[in-house]
Image 1 (cartoon, rainbow, N blue to C red):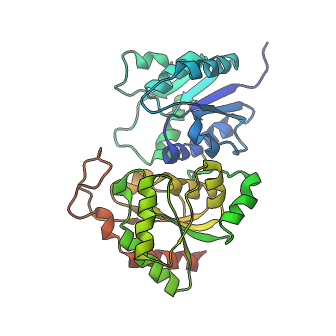
Image 2 (cartoon, helix red, strand yellow):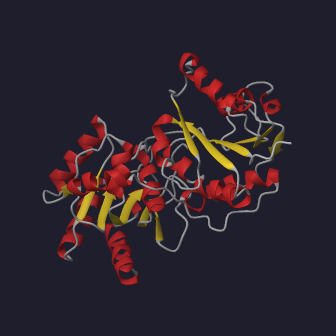
Image 3 (cartoon, helix red, strand yellow):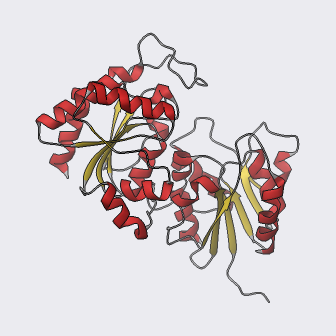
Amino acid sequence: MNSRPEKILALQFKYFGDAVLMTPALRALRQNFPQAEIHLLVPEEIAPLFQHLPWLNRVWPMPRKRGSANFGKTWPLIRALRNEKFDRSVDFASNDRGAFLSFAIGAKRRLGWAERGGFFGRKFFYNDRVAPDKNPPHESVRLAQLLSGWKISPPDSLEAEIRSDRALAEVAKKILPQNDSIICHAASSQQKKEWPRAHWAELNRLANAAGLNLIFTTARGEREAALMTELKKLAPDAIILPAILELPLFLAVLNRAKIFISGDTGPLHFAAGLGASTISLFGPTSPARWAPIGAKHQVLTGGICNCDGHSAVCTAARHCLAEISPQQVFAALQKNFLEV
C-alpha cells in the first residue's frame, strides 16, 4: 500500500497581477491538504512571484512566448513533471495551453473550468470540471471557487500573498534607501489604465508641500521611459527610480513600500501581496473584480469608461481616469497616514 502524501500540481497560465490573485486559492489547497506536496507550474517570467512562498514545495517555471509553442523546450519539462506522478492537478486558467499540459502531465484527477471555446475536445482533458459563475465575482473568489470541484472549502482570507527574496534586501536598500516609502507606479501595459501625467505631477506637488516624498517607478520599455521623461518636465523635483529589469529585485524594492499608488496594474497586486497599503485608481476595469482585497486598500473610481473592452488605448474624448483628481488621491494618502 502506498502511504506517501498526495502530490498536487497547480497550473496558472495568466500574467502577473492575474496570477497573484491565485494565491488565496493556493492557500486553500494547503489548508485542505496539510500533508500534501504542492507544486506550481507557471510561465518562467512570473515564477519569482511564488518562489518564496513557504506553503509551496516547488515552483516549476515554463519557458514560453505568447501565441507560440516551443515543444523543444517544453517537452523535457513535461517529461520531468510526468515523472513526479501527481495525484491531482488543478488548472486555474483552463485555456488551451493549460488543458493540454494538464492532460500531458498525467495526474489521476485533473480539475479545470467547464467553459466553452478553445480547441475541439478540450473539455475531455479534465475529469473534474466546475461551471463558472455567469456573473464573475472578485477574481480571487472565482479562482477559489474552482476548488469546489474537489469539495475544498474557501480560504480563511482572500488577501493576496507573495514574498520577496530576502537575499536581495541589501541591494534593494541601495536602490531605495528610505524604508516605508510612498511608491507611485505611473505606467501600465495598457495605456488606458494610466492616470494622466499632469495629475501625477500635481499629486507630487501636494505631497511635497505636506512634507511627503513620493517615489515614482515605471516598467521597462521605451514608451515607459518617455512617460517618465514627460513627468519629469511637469514635476522637475519628482524622484524617479530607474527601471528595474529583474522581477526579483523589483519585488525586493517594492517590499520597502509603506503605501503604493497606481492604476490597475500587475505591480499594484505585487505591492498588496507584499503587505503594503494601496491606493488604486480604477476606470476601464471593475474594482469589484480586480481591486486588492483587505482593510489596508483604498479604491478610487473614475468616470464611466466608454472604451472598447479589447482596446489597450483610451478612445474616449475624456479619459475616465482623469475624473479622479489629484486632490482625491492626496486625501486618500492623508487618510492612510491617519489610520496606519
